[in-house]
Image 1: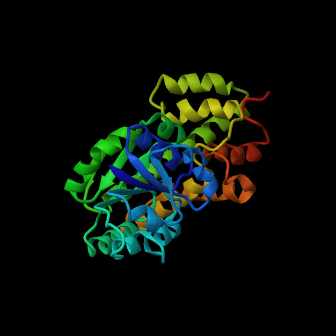
Image 2: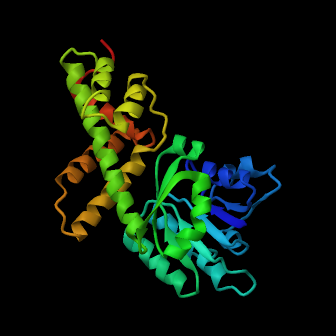
Image 3: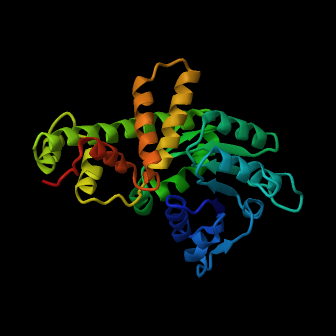
Length: 301
């Protein structure tokens, strides 16, 4: 199958690699061309100069981008995906799949614009971070036409271990924002709990064992806890991206008139973390905000 992949960042690059290794022909595009270097020697991959060129020679287009503004530029810009769908010199892709985490209204607007030119769109954001993308064990959260989902399911299964169909366009984006709010709440709760143990003279490493054996068990504790103790804040998912997602979750909750006091608190914590210059570190760097408050480094005596 001819596939375009647009956005070769932390998540997009390994996702595209899984498709290439499975034998698909790829056209890849990234704003920063340095991100395409690992694809240069691959015979089945063409590196292109615009999203339009990528989409114009593909049956299915995948995008994995940072935020709403970038997504809109890639889809609606002068040399964007939509321009390929209306240019008679290019073939029109059958399906466009956006794996970015963006506001649901943006997703539905783009789906409507693409539907007007005969192209189906899926919102298919993923649950998982860089290690999950590298291992091919992401979970896709999919909204759009069921038929388009079924067409893309074999491709989702190459990049992930599960793809869940949620309903019409926008439902995947809705669920992803709710998911990331819980992820952010979990990591901030972990940071707060570890800070209490540290300040009281306890052993944070043993505390993680306590969490693993009881009702407070979480992926945050299992994955991020040891990284906090090892002072490894290299970004698997940047704090500034989580801040963006939590803000979008708050906007969604407000539009639905759902009270969201936890969201408001978590948003403030990530804003403080980013304001302190930690936005490009892993989201677990929120613990450094607590360490500044308690005047101690977790794990140090």
